[in-house]
Image 1: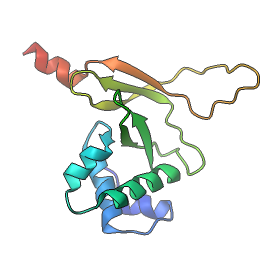
Image 2 (image 1 turned 135 degrees about the vertical axis):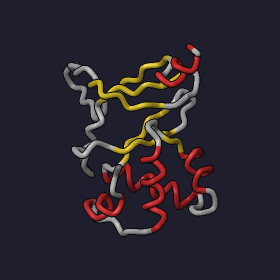
Image 3 (image 1 turned 60 degrees about the horizontal axis):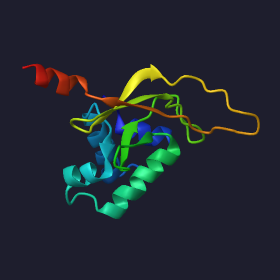
Image 4 (image 1 turned 30 degrees about the vertical axis):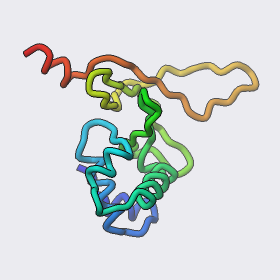
Length: 141
């Protein structure tokens, strides 16, 4: 389990109830969480603008990384400990379930891509689409 207070302290962010709640809510799920999902879960605790600002701050600081789903909705997951304000190290495969639409961060590295001369990649992503473990197991029964 993550320690929101420690994460905020490590990244020189002010400890607020809203910031802690967002981290706690994202950490509860094994899948990435979309902003609309967070809005529903947090209800009236945090308004949409504040949530948007918190998510942007967390992404800028290397606390969360953003994954776009099949519909173009941003989903957020906790970054690895090696991510920093200046560089995300989330070069892993994302799995987008076509049944439940959840996105999972997999412990599978994205293959290195040799860029042509003159091209500089700042981010490389890889998304696999299919049916997740949970949906597969419920379909078997």
